[in-house]
Length: 165
Image (cartoon, rainbow, N blue to C red):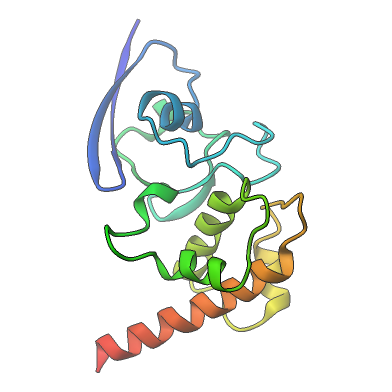
């Protein structure tokens, strides 16, 4: 039995036939939609490498069954930058050395984008570390990651003020 679901991924509509209702959102993104930026780390929801934004909220895509999210809007790391400009969080990760090997970076960036959009980032490094604790970095780039979230939050707040003026 095949089930068809509709998803909007990075602004593009997709209709996907699922032969197996146990397909995770992570596997659908990587294997069916050819979006390999979302990483498969632990495949148990413990490392955060697979973080995407699902209807604006941070989600471990390895724990989300694709069939449960029919009609959802998903943003992956591939959907953040425009053709000629990085997302402010991506730019901040580069400027602040928020990565080393880079494996966890897409999940870290997506988690940071969600954290900032939720309005929880603020300017407290300890709060940011706590709210990003679901994303693990084997290399230990946490200082740069925290600095990047702080910088991106500041950049986005300034941008919002300029647009409001």
